[in-house]
Every structure is written in structure tokens, then in C-alpha cells.
Length: 283
Image 1: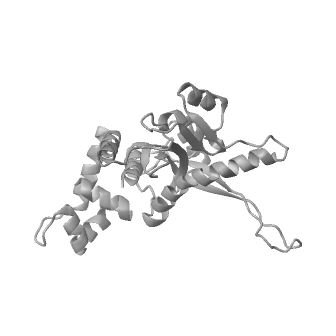
Image 2: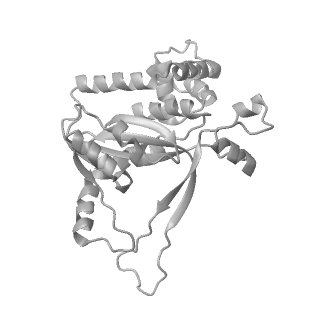
Image 3: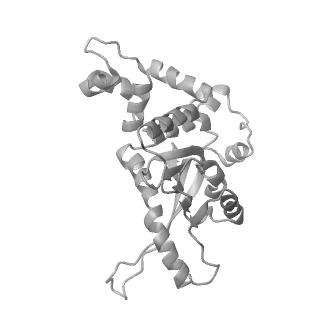
């Protein structure tokens, strides 16, 4: 049954689509050890198995076992670690302003029957992704400059830490999309990494995080911010560029999850979303 969840994560399949694809694809049947006359678990069975993992909060134990297997195979966490987070989209909720206010306050909106409340995701949140426009080299100086974008996104956030040597996920966590990245740094730092370096973007730069890293004998390579209403000093800009060449490796992991695996959250609630995102981090 666990292998079925692996297939779901790899191909972003719903429970019904998983049942159909197992029956349709010989490659899936070989992976699961099923013969042509084997019994294929139906969609309800897959859902119930995943719900048991949710109730047992098993993803942390599974991830610890996975990390132990990596170490046994010689893939030790080396060279330092890179920390980052990305938003994982979830279906948008159509709520009134009064309902939104109640959800933010942690209450069930008035008039919601239990059946409706079970179908509403009250843990996912809106966030804004800022995309800074860049001027192409050799562009016409008189041409209109590209515009910076602010893209609203609804869902959850996947927080991960990878090792610099192999690019494998060593630590992970999930939260609502509006959670601050920097606050999760202490939870993502792996003490088992043989390197002391820690790379991250400016969202993780704070006095509290710098003090935490110094106390743990880690070397901070977190990007530095420019001061408000002042240009970025050339020396700091060059240092950030050197850090970016290493920090960018974590973006390859997110790109694989979102483009190759098509990672989205179709479940309801942070607990189920943690299993969904955690499985994507495992595979």
C-alpha cells in the first residue's frame, strides 16, 4: 500500500486515477508486485490507508527511516545545508468576507453545517509571490521597462533543507502559505550534516536566526538585505551573488516537484497536507 502512495506522489494522481492507472499500466503492476490476475486496491482502500498514516502522524517516522537508508547507502549529509520554502497550491475557497474573518479567527463560520465544514479547507491561506522583473541585456534603452509582478497564491508551504553535496532533502515541514519562512529555520537545521555552512535567502536573515546558528557552531551564508531606500553596496551584492550560486540548487528540487511531479494539494486540512507534501519530499 505504501508503494501506491509513492506512485501517487510521483505522478500527482487522485485516488480514483491511481486505481485506474494500476489496472491499466503493466509498469505500475510490476512496481507493486502484482500479477495480471492480482487484486488491485480500490480508491476507497487507498484513501483509508492514507488516513491511517494521517492519524498516526507517521510522516516524520517515515522520513527518519528514509534518511537512515540514505546514510546506509553512503549518501551522508555533507558540505553544509541549504534551506528554502515554496508555496504548494490548493483549490481556492469561495467564502464571504464574514466567513473569511471567522476562519482567520479559528472559528467555524455561522450557518455551516458539519457536512459543509468537512468540505472546506480552513487551514490553507493566501500568500503573495513577488517576481522581480529583469531588463534583458542589449535591450533598447527607450523601450518600456518590464514590470515587477505580485502573484497571489492559495495553499500551503513546503519547507525543506537539503544537503549541499548530494542535493537530497534531509529535513522538511509543512505550514499554511502565509507562514514566515524565517521562523522555521531552527526546525530545518540538521545537526547530522558534516558541514557547518547554512545557505538561505533574505527571508531567513534575522538577529534571532543568526544567534541560533552561532550558538550551534554553524556558519551563516544567508543573503543580506539592502537597507531601506538605499542602493545595495557593491561588496554585499557580489557576496550575495556567490551565495546564490550554491543556494540555487534547492530551486532544482522544487522545480522537479512542481513540474515533473505536478505537486498540488487536493486534500483538506494541514494534517492531510503534511502527508501529501511529505510524500513528495520522500520520493
